[in-house]
Length: 459
Image (tube, rainbow, N blue to C red):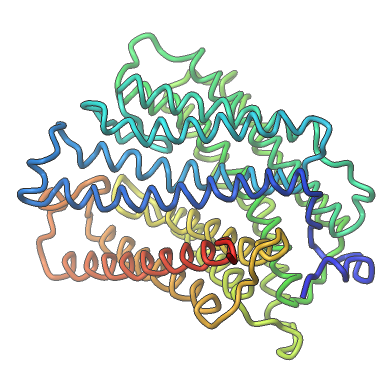
């Protein structure tokens, strides 16, 4: 049943109403881009496997196609998926005052994604596996990445200038819309930080070091945008799942404002330390490590208390509920692991996999909720209910294996014999990692089947 009909009765319900027809079409466009990025990224996984398979690898004429395909896979399944779903949220909150601006942002993002997807097939990409946004040193890929970045920038500016006016910030709906606005501010700061990094780039920086410096600070700042949208998702899913939250909209507003403090602090790091200096990188890391929980910890704690204190009969156990539970678990696990990082081993990807998957699970839950409200077929069946459980459990196993093997010194960004899997402990721990990853892939495929089945025309 559509919860929007209950909004007047439950003023503190944290639920967003669906927009009008014009903005709704734009929302659906961003949804299709997000899901399409996951599908194409999955197809690149097949190319990654084939590029290391005897006989098949001889068909591919380009040097190091394994890492070339891996770059595009990562950018599609992380960058485009996350920023595309940010477009979903902000389109839900967009007005019709400059709807053409929203469509232009969408068109640039789609074009950029298509160009990046085509880049591996036009020649040797000279892949670089730098953090946050790995790149191909090819004009086609860099053009596509620039177009997508321009589309995202326009999306943020359009959201800041032309979001729907909030009737009352002291309501659950108003608090969520304010949370979306803080996400826009964090997104704008990430673009600003990217420009600052380019301007302050040391003259000797080139190749992998250049792109590492270019994206490191902006990538860290962008995480605060993801956190804001994650918290909006948690509050929304809690209401949908019948969780009793002892939380007023006024408190939510305050927490979202507190969450912006580390975002505003980031530019000051550039005033104190030169880009590329050890203290600069250390300061950015500290802002992320201790600032990320300013908003996430109190809201996460309140949601957990609500989950534990709610009566069983009031809870609506379904895909939204399971997505919420496993999202909180993965985010907590990823946060704890972040304080365990010591060196460049596989504990690092264990940390960010926890955080990334937490956001992904939240977006899966939101997808299940909004698709019927956007005019598509209802999400029904046990498969949808179990999908977040399968995906979440697989990722927990995956992360457990990474942390376990990290304790034995297995290095990140290595594969095959380069991993140095000597000894039963390393072999078993990485085996657990692989098993969990396989289960998670199955969960991801089930999600895509469910959403596309919902979106497929009846006739």
